[in-house]
Image 1 (cartoon, rainbow, N blue to C red):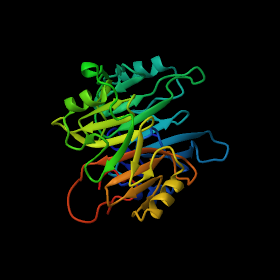
Image 2: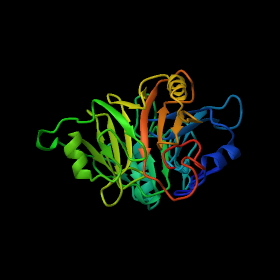
Image 3: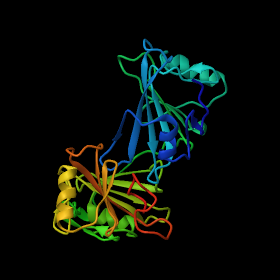
Length: 312
């Protein structure tokens, strides 16, 4: 299973839409969110040698907020190779040494594992029950080892958005607005962790106490707002977080709101936001309320982006 860095894998090339990949590979064994406000990851269970007695391994296909494939992770015991070097199921030190002898730059990551930065390849950390690396992750872009930035509340500010917040149609959630400056949001929401997202923006702040994740563009203005627990969010008298997703849908329809059903998501086109759940089942609770800046023009909100609700 030889990988081609920055390209993807057979039947799943970077830049492909989720629908195109599913048409080629079939429906995933499951789809889930790795985080409360994350996009859906498709998981496939694959047999290593195509025979019933072969060892199964997992493949995780990650899509951005336009439903375009941007990363693939393959877990041990997959027979993954690069330049003929087997990457999983062998002592990690041997793998790193062979890759370096083959001329690749291999660097230790601050968080976990090792990376081949120029190739967009990350070798996942080791565990006691795994001989060597646990996984190989392929990205469409080069790997950046940007350290997390921990920032304290400004001027003693507390989590202003921790109380009940109302969706403001196409503009924001509670006191947070699209287009707001990063410095203003930090003063408003208190301390948190800043990072560089793999896609969807230039920077990102996670305000844990407030239950808010904000994504910024290169100018440092908010382009995506996500509220999750412990925040409380409503719209038109409908509580949106922490309820079974079918209850939210029924309540919204009773309030004569338009709701578009998507995979593990409800989209509210008249206000431009989405309510997410961890997976596509009617009884699972909602995990996040997301509103993003309009991308492009023309057409009704939500058209042409089924399954994401994050770009509309």
